[in-house]
Amino acid sequence: MNRARKSNTPLRGRSRSNDEHDLRARLTTLRIGHGYDLHRLVEGRPLFLAGVQISHSRGLLGHSDGDVVLHAICDAVLGAMGIGDIGQHFPDTDERYRGIDSSELARHVAALMRDEGWSIGNVDVTICAEEPRLAPHRHAMRNRVADLLGAPITSISIKAKTNEGLDAIGRGEAIAATAVVLLEDAPGVQREV
Image 1 (cartoon, rainbow, N blue to C red):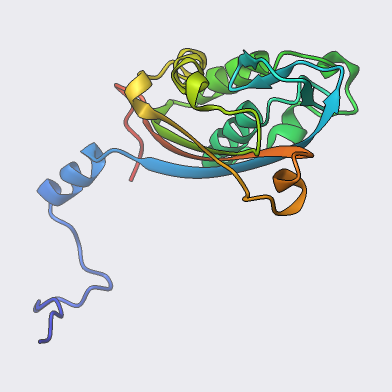
Image 2 (cartoon, rainbow, N blue to C red; image 1 turned 180 degrees about the vertical axis):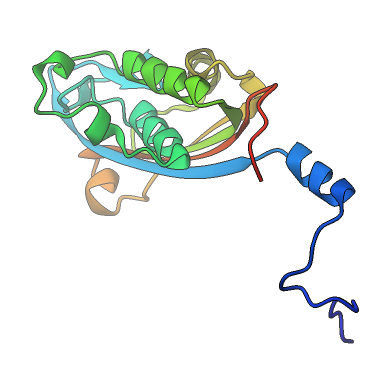
């Protein structure tokens, strides 16, 4: 069946009616971003994931507190806005960020997001770790991320997977996280279409 659009006017050069233009102008603008982070587990450091301290014998090595979840979310939000990544905004060569609580980085990125007229549509995170068991901490992590980003908890999904004993994550040497973020126009924002 031919589903081609039938019109007496060719698509190129075709003018839109005022109604169609007004409708397009009222449509919400959406942006999608993806983030990834991985850090090595080491002795003598606390483990922070999604801004929540998790009881474990090792923590993540990093210039900051090493929170791979918040780092992946920050990268996803910055990427969706098209303004770089976490390394550009908070370089590990800057001593101001040594040992910083990644919640501060997430708050800063959320403020940039709001200043640019965006709000969170949803956040979907997958944490890859052999241990510790993360299911008991899922609600606290979702709540913390929602608070940091100014989003409802129903917009935040956090899942945990193992690597079935494969690679550095599977051997318990590292933890990684991926994040996908959907940004939408903040209430009251109208962008040119």
